[in-house]
Image (cartoon, rainbow, N blue to C red; front, side, top):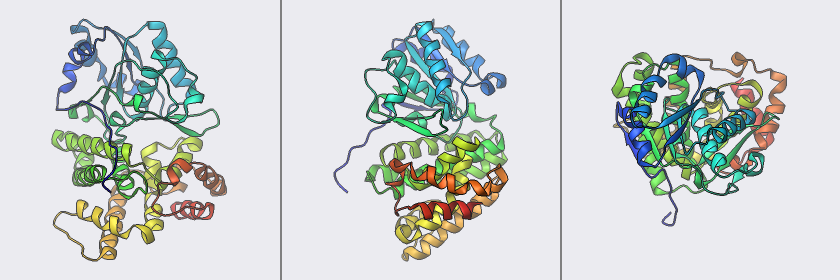
Length: 384
């Protein structure tokens, strides 16, 4: 493919300790009254204190919204928007995992350009300008700091997305030291999430291009090489920083070459059972990869070469076998549940989950192989 469009966050800073300059960076964007979006876990961990001190030293007033929930419900997002409007803020910082970053995107948009949230679910429906926005990820997983997507859980337990170029932040700030306190299971779940982004971007049927391909391959190389170290030795700053970079590159890739069936099957698990997004992806990853094999041996062989330095595969089938084996070995090492039955999913609910997954056509159309309801049900059965 020679004709394509590639978009991403215009400025990225990746350096251990970079969060100490957050106040100055916000001031450079013209911010005087900052709205910081985060969650209670980070407040309890004490990560906010030095960041708020740096903001104060730059002469910026800060309002903190720390009630972000996982897989943010619509009502939680709207509560944050209302708080930002009441505070009269002129800039937003997302500080945390994907839920905080996604909430911050919507706060920056809706506080600056009021519009009903349910009316902008979909692609390109958001209107108006947003407030200045800085994203500071504290997990290496979602890549939300470089995507134009915010995922919300609706009152009917559906996962819906707002997709718009306005959601790209002005700045992504990656500081590996902020991820040092992540528990092993969170490191694992978010790391596999980032790997799925790279895999699905590389195999996407739509908008796949040379830039997204290069980013996806490098992302998978970094993530696979460092995830076990980051899990076992959470204080390894080099491994933590490499995971953040891998997550970033994977985010840049799938923001332009969108994800497929893994995410489509994962969303109902989060919506109905509250399974964390990274874990949901992990639980269905192996069955989806197996299903896609007839249409994806060649890209899977290329992904295997990224994951297995020094290996080269002239036979795509052999390379795909190596890719599947490497993924299965990695998943077996992850310190969390490995089957749907282990996270409270009831077997009798699998048909309902398959029906819900089929409603996520915006993602299924990107999958390298067409997915019918019977296919989705069979993949859930394989994951059970």
